Length: 196
Image 1 (spheres, rainbow, N blue to C red):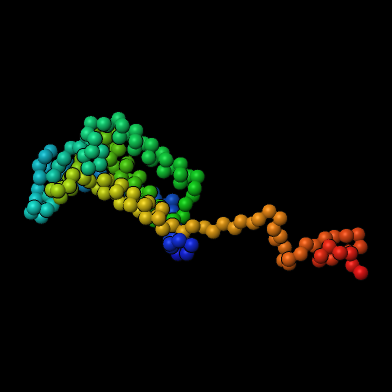
Image 2 (image 1 turned 90 degrees about the vertical axis):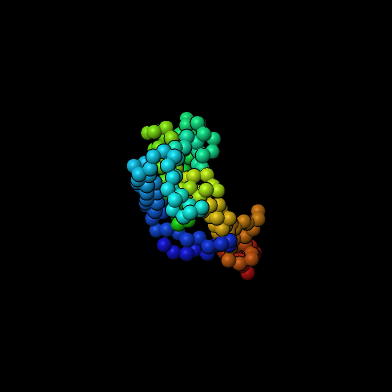
């Protein structure tokens, strides 16, 4: 990977952005599913274990809503939304072929998070949440990946370099000199006059 300076911000390009996106996606899905299995096997639904008193608990929550428990009971809507998001990312990647490292990792995080929660909704009809900071809705690894990826996309949109575009006015000459070169029957003159 290497740096490319643009007219706005610095872009870090990846040598194999597609592989990076897939690797990020795979790590998120695997980590999300493994931790959910551990929580499901270790804690009963609604059971909570204190990690840091008054600040952080592990709480087994069965969430039928979106990330952070929003809009409960809308399983079909969330499944369709996840499929739409994943399809949009795939189409964008196929058509744009981006090389940005930040973009590849961010899209990998969003895709991995969407797939992690989609697996839960399709298989069990609900998502397992467990990170409980008491003053915030309970969430999981997939939710963290989606939010982090979205922040990465926002940062990329703000800081990605703008490629300069050259515009030429109608009638503008692109030759080496300021005058036109004309070919006449008797020869060539820089200013279009016949040679003496």
